[in-house]
Length: 117
Length: 114
Image 1 (cartoon, rainbow over the protein chains, first blue to last red):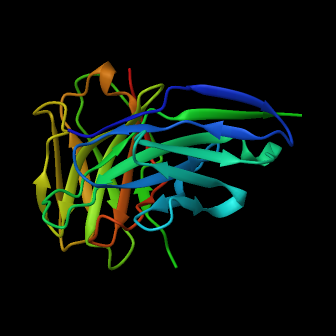
Image 2 (cartoon, rainbow over the protein chains, first blue to last red):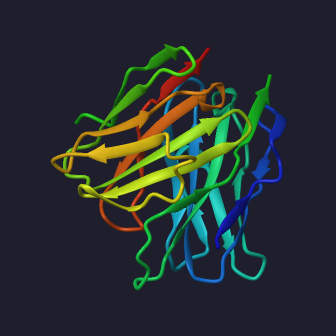
């Protein structure tokens, strides 16, 4: 069974500082990986996704994530955060096998990023 | 174009009552998902639709929960005999029918059971 772990429930960081939000997954099969963001009082939207190819994936708003197969991680990073990045961030995984019959996505419990002035 | 819409946005009900939550997916999206978001619990998968059929109902918490989808479009999630632990935000998402495509989420329905 697949699972996603986001160890940090809350991450406070000062404006213009770098940030890394951690995501580890557990799966015995190949997976697709996603990061979603939920701004206050809004729905979730996709930040970026890893399907295949380059392990460094760039997304919207200056975010990027690196897929590390050996460490089963997909950490999200931004070199300089803004107040507007304050939101909840969710990591998710889906089964990448073409023979799989499931379209289920597994989400982590989320990390609340609080950017301080 | 229009995104995923959900109604009502807020629902307050008394314990023991039945509630119906509605989701209108993006036109042309054959996959539809229901999730429950509770404080500190992340997104809990409830059910997935492929067209009108639900090949994966594994996340429904109890037999009080059911969902249907008609015409490959609108879906309703019904909770019978609501309990206080059912209080949460119920999110709907739709996507094109592949695992690599992103899910587009609605704004959610906040359910409060008194």
